[in-house]
Length: 237
Image 1 (cartoon, rainbow, N blue to C red):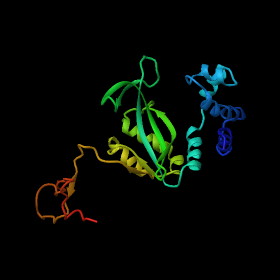
Image 2: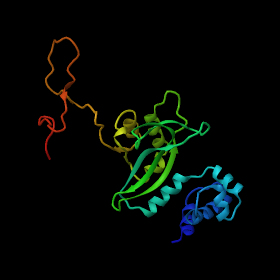
Image 3: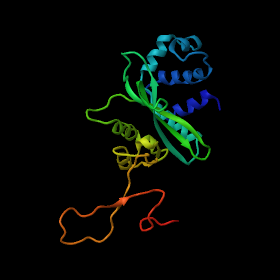
């Protein structure tokens, strides 16, 4: 199937704003694969059928990228899917870029000045392939909202499209804490991650309660050592 035929098939299933946007997207996807050099409006007008202003105006209009890519993933990927979520740091200099600030860079191991985008992808567990769904820039945090709460809100606002693909979200150890975990669980997702290296786990106390004793009842029963688990709390399988 050609790129244009596949694009037309998906566009007929999703809601587009108007007929002109439908024609523009049919033209744009084959152009993206054929253009040489930089991907900017000037080069698109050099290789495409429209002028530079036409490309600028259409890119400024909203388009349902998540809905489009989710439909593509449901057609091309298998049945056993997972949603991968990971923020990505993009270095950016200047003072007037929207959303510029200090974000954590995994490569540098520290915070750097630039932009940040949260990538959402659908992962095929059988074929070990992934298709990108949407990239969301880290902008528009509400007053008093932490970055973890913002990341959780990104997924929850898109849960209708994401839950149609999978309810399992895979993220790294940074997200294995509040409020990210409980927010996703409350919206019907299941989080697959690992604990951080500095995670402190403790056994719950299940022993007898002493009567007529002053103070708060005993809640925990020591720290968990993952290399020497206690047999009264864990059973080998």
